[in-house]
Length: 410
Image 1: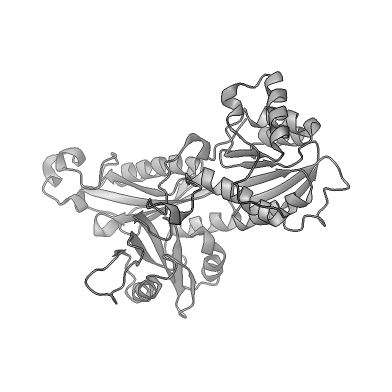
Image 2 (image 1 turned 30 degrees about the vertical axis):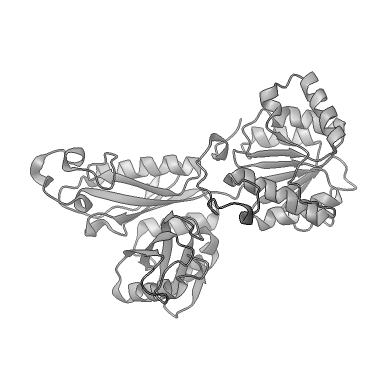
């Protein structure tokens, strides 16, 4: 929901009801990830997307129905072989979409989550999407140290225990910056969605209920600050990299020790322009907890007096990406200098240099595309091959790595 948060918050602040359809599960070659959302207000205005166009019309109608009925529902969309005109994903994937009406003031959990998203406070929006009917649509807003909202009532339910367990599990996902699902038994114990009664029931009084009545599946949307891209070296290539970094959703900082080059006028698209020695600036950001496992560092100075002290520190941190510009010769000389200051071969293996994929780039803009492509491939687990050259999956289910976690580095 983060990509439509501005419009949704405007509706909420104005007291306008709306329905939001959220992708909660994806399999196969689906066009959008979990968390993608489409919202429709009572005037019929729509923002966002759940499928890139394949099923938007059907989801729009489901949102309108939810506004009329006031009931949340879970729907599945997939490829249809029987009818070429049936609503489905032409790409062959399957998505589950949770459609929920939102009335400002009706849910403490939703209200608090939207307020936190608007203020930029890291928050996990937690919603029950499957299980006993009385719980469907219940929402919690979970932050680092507290949570808001309550879950519904149901026979056999331990409300306090389930709420505590849901908040604890969601807080761990928020800490990792993860969006996804988990399932709990009604007493708060972790289990699978199709768990047997022996796994879920503390006593026999609820043993004959269906699996959907014995468990609750929650969908967690972790809303954390945008990942950072720090570009060192205020050169013309840096301006192009800063532009494409912002396009990819990074909060971009350009840093250079030379005040004549590091100016806001030269880098109008950067979120911040800093005049400081690169290694000193990185030290300060690490000490302040403002870099994490999603941070991308692009070292474009190709000047040893700047590069070596900076890379000596950066390659020892669990950052998301560290790349450096330079020729093959510069790269080899840089490696020797880094070995001389004590870096191990394992630490050196984390350096992506020369930075960027081999696209034959010449201009600063083409070079920025090559740099961005390598960052995306590294983050998502791409092969860097043309899709037309192989028959493998288009979308990679890249497993969560330690380097992906937005934990404070200090």
